[in-house]
Image 1 (cartoon, one colour):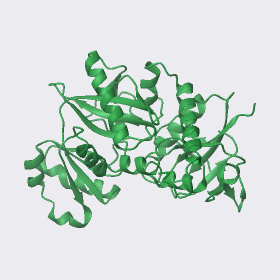
Image 2 (cartoon, helix red, strand yellow):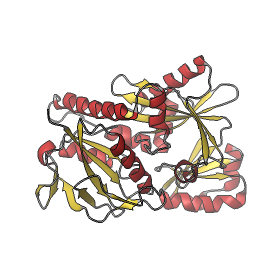
Image 3 (cartoon, helix red, strand yellow):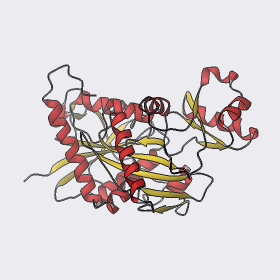
Image 4 (cartoon, helix red, strand yellow):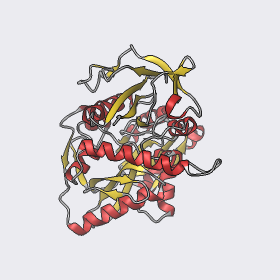
Length: 367
């Protein structure tokens, strides 16, 4: 029986480029090679796509700060309507051979926000993860939180700041409304890039400058005192939640450095030490959050658990990290699904969705 050909796409233009490469490396190492044939596509920091003839595509692959794509790939593009036979082309001709399914391992803007997902729909290619809508609202923390609030899902208080109205932003007003400390974060980014915890007025302008360098829209959010809990979700129409895990940061908060660079930046407790009723509430709220945002395939839902046992949903990540210290695969492993089996299930979910959507008449909503 022929193997299923999986195009793993990684890198990208966002500040999470290096995280994406780490995630892709782990997926490629764990995927079942008896069942799947891997095709690697790397996107460089300018947005150019390159096909790599095998999975030898990285330089400094064991150094999370220096990891980068090799420069030996063949440039290619995606052909609208090309489908599995010729959706990926070079000089107008099929470049990669038949592709059965795409596994985008792209974190942040231009990868996790619905843009690439729309491209795959136009190319008529099955792909892993949320569609256009779920990806877009999952990326934009402002829209995400408004949808959560409308659905009655508990969230932290927040304000949205826009670059064009920056001269009207007053630290004193935000501190009075949200209390101290509070967080400043870009609305459309992940991996804690551009995020700062504000304790004093002197920290505010620098943090705002950094956040606005990442996005035109910035969230200012109250700091919740509580345990940091994460829960993985897997599935399409009937998603399931993993056992939750706990993160105990050793930095001021769970920063990019703590997540991906500093091996001792945080302590992970997997599974979290929680009473069974609390575990059930977390799992139910994780699945509900996943469904409210129209997600599919996979997502990681992040919570705060307050001392009074109240749960606050912090955010959702529709393409969670797959690095060697990432919570998404670790939580499924402790819940009974190994890393190779998890990758297999994600690919099969993508193929099943594609077959279902293929039954929709032309003009149907596939987002």
